[in-house]
Length: 44
Image 1 (cartoon, one colour):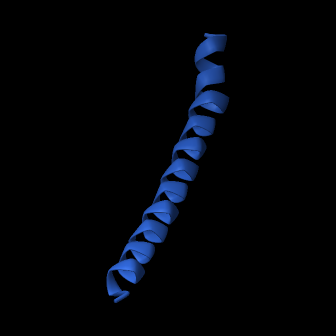
Image 2 (cartoon, helix red, strand yellow):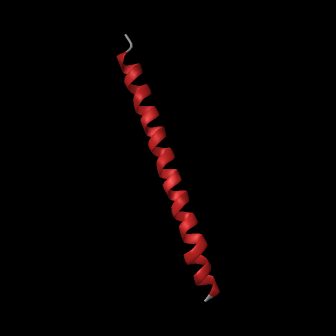
Image 3 (cartoon, rainbow, N blue to C red):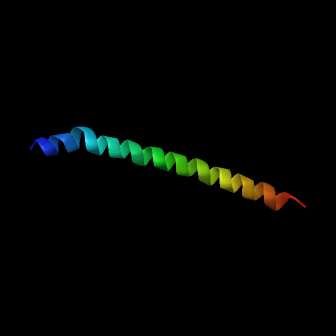
């Protein structure tokens, strides 16, 4: 029972935060890559 409580109070919220942070970071990387690709493709 204590393990379930620890999961619900600590592990799951911590995992959700880590997933959200990873999602945000990947979105930034994708934007960076897309912007650089657009700049390179516009160069003569």
